[in-house]
Image 1: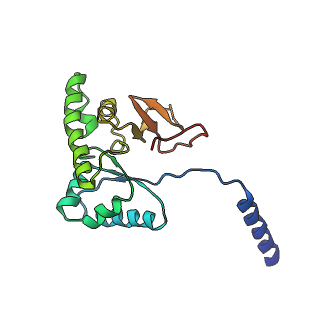
Image 2: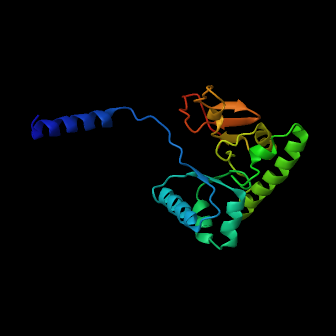
Image 3: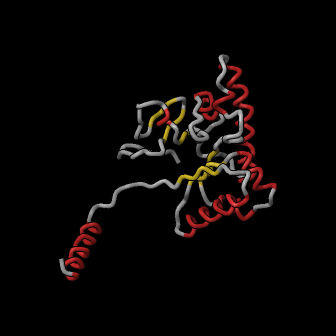
Length: 200
């Protein structure tokens, strides 16, 4: 095929793509969890500022202790950059043992609930204080540490959106919004349908 023909095909393909109906929604969703490496702060700052520069509002899921560390380290630049975006919680300590999934894995539901409520209320409080927020938009589990106790705790803390994690429950993939444990579940791999809406 000659260069001219390739160029013509490229133009026609581009025109077809431009003429196609524009549909789709994108969520910029960041798990913001590394409180041990100062270089992670630079990555958080970069992504928050980049989204703002291009007019996008991202969602940053902060580990409570990470928010506190930003404050202790005087990283007002990172806090300010994050303040332009939606903020969620990703537990108090993320992957530090015992994780939220480990310490709630006990026979007594009430005991698990009380400990989870104490830790996660602390996490939510830290994030709200550092970010100067009245409420957080969502909760996400740390990796695959999924526990129904935490879902009920976060729901009782006034957070009604839960992100990710559902795909760890065997073959039952959920690819759309679902309501359970008094929370709206938004799987990371969701493809929202026309009738799906996400609370503001």
